[in-house]
Image (cartoon, rainbow, N blue to C red):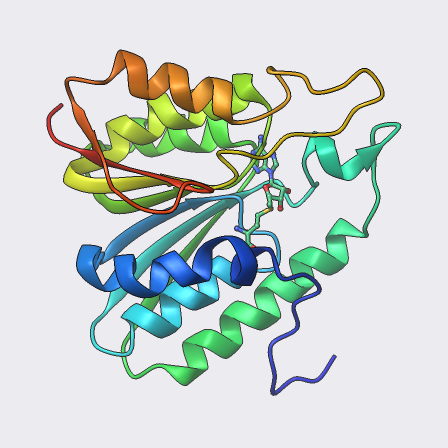
Length: 212
Ligand SMILES: C[S@@+](CC[C@H](N)C(=O)[O-])C[C@H]1O[C@@H](n2cnc3c(N)ncnc32)[C@H](O)[C@@H]1O
């Protein structure tokens, strides 16, 4: 591993998010950030470089570093997740070394339901300006991330969902429970009086909280 450059093995963030984040993140201009699903830290590093160039930020990352169900065959991750975790540490260290301001990076290694609940019991309701949900892609998990994330989000803060339109191609076709959209739609329907959907290209969905 070259210690002076980033080490990313995929372009998920570049292809799905970066184009929209380039115009949206400066508008939201978050200081307190929560990310569910960090993998090698591509989205984390983007936020660090973009925001901590001009101010101090606090960023919390939740990940099992075990991979999602869709990354596993027979229950075993298809990539070495301990290498992925090492690359996360290397990449975030690189990003922090590039910026002028202090970055408080807090890692919560574990399942998002437990980590998000713990943030709530630690008193962080209404604390975050920006929450990025990019962990498990199973509808049951995404629904839980959305509901707990909403409680942790400040009024006027934004919760962003990656892979709104992602679906697995399974032997029997697609499965509405094995993708994020079913959960995100349930959340946005039930919370319609408390949110506003931000106009943006649809692969990700950006939702602003307008009331508790
Ligand atoms: C798509 S990757 C995240 C990509 C990252 N945001 C980026 O931009 O490169 C999904 C991550 O979520 C983690 N994950 C999956 N299910 C999870 C769960 N229930 N709780 C916490 N992390 C989970 C996986 O270990 C994986 O690292």
